[in-house]
Each structure stands twice: as structure tokens, then as C-alpha cells.
Amino acid sequence: MTQIYGSCLPSDVDSLLQTTTKCVNCDKTEFMWLTTARNQHRLTPSGPLIGSTVFPPSSSVRDLGVFTDQELTMRTHVQRTASRCFATLRQLRSIRRCVPTSFFQSLVSALVLSRLDYCNSLLIDLPSTLLQRIQSVQNAAARLIYNLRRCDHISEALISLCWLRVPERIMFKVAMLTYRALHGTAPPYLASFTCVADMPHRHKLRSASTEQIDVPFFRLSTVGGRAFPVAGAKVWNSLPTDVTSVLLIPPLL
Image (tube, rainbow, N blue to C red; front, top):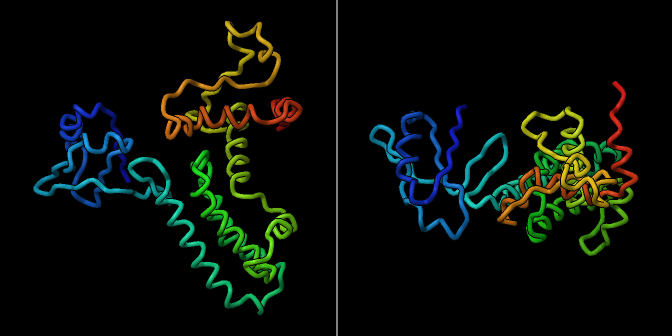
């Protein structure tokens, strides 16, 4: 599968379309504009012309199991993930009384939680309404394991299962990726963090004596604030100092 990315100002979209058209063919081609809702009306409604076929822009595309929408809200991915997980839970419900609880918990973890955790770092700083949709899947899974009613409290069940809630699972994934990036065990394109202590113009500040990471400047909180260099730095800086100071010790090989 070949993917082509390009960026331009709204006034230069025609030039970008001409350039990308030369690099693709008609087989299984998808095209999508990535921009904010404010700029959607400034883009051409048609897509690239490949041969004699015009490809209209898609509202969302799937890439490695992740659905990306035009405004990078991840709404489509959340809805598709929740829908598939609920479908799996309905199938598991038919065998709930036939297997031991411990084995059934393993099935739920393998078939449902693994799907919730897949690429969940992309969901960092999403609105609570979207995260609640994913949380409802986790709650339903816990209720199914313990045969709880919908009116029963779910907190004790999650604690008993040792399951972090969805926002905490996302933060854990981002913190883990940040840790790997700091130690050089993550892909090179993720290793873009700068420690405050290593910045010459800030070495006299109080923050220079901590293990904090510099948060890059960004403009759009809805998109730029969720970029990994920004979100990773924020999550890492939110951790207690006694945790980050220990985690920064290189692991033994």
C-alpha cells in the first residue's frame, strides 16, 4: 500500500492535486482533505482526476485499522471501535454461563480490551463525550464478567479486574511511548523531546533541576495540542518527580 501526504495553503490546492495525480493510479485509491472545519469550505469539492475518473474527497479513511476523519477528531474511529466491541460482547454473552469466570475474563481481554488499547494513544485529549463512549464498552465488559446489572456501580468491578479506566489507559500508553523515546528505544520519528535541563537559556530556572520536558509551541489545541511531541511532554511533566527521576535511569540490558 502506497500513501502520499502533502500540505499546502487553501489557495494552492489545485497545484497540490496536480502533483499528487502524477503519483497514483486508479486501483483502490482514496483521497481525503485534512483540515479544520473552518477551512473546509475553502477547498475544492472535487478530488484528483486520475485517468478519466474523478475521486471525490472521503470523509474518513482507514489506515492500519485506525479510522481518520477530515478534522482529525477521531470520532469515526471511536464509533467504529465501540460498535465492533459491543458486537463482540454480544457474541461472548451467549457462552458466559458455559466457561469459568477466569477463562471468560481472558477472552474479554483478548477480544475486547486489546481492541480498545490498539493505537489508543491517538485518543489523547479527546473530548470527554467521545472517551465516555469507549468507557461504556469497558464498563459493559466488566458487567458481563461479573454478571452485574446496568444499575450496579462499576468502580469496584474495575478495581477487582485491575483495569485502568480509558483516560488512564491512554495516558499510560503515551507515557510509555515517551519513556521509550527518551531512551532511544522508540522509532526515530518519535524521539523529538528536549529536556529543560539541556536548554541553555533555561538552565538557571527552577524547572531545570527537575526531569521535565520542554513543551513545544502549538497553535491549535484541537490538533496541535494532541501531537505526540506536545501530548507526550505534557503527560510526562504531569508525573510525580520521584517517578520520572526513577524512569529516566536507563534500564539494564
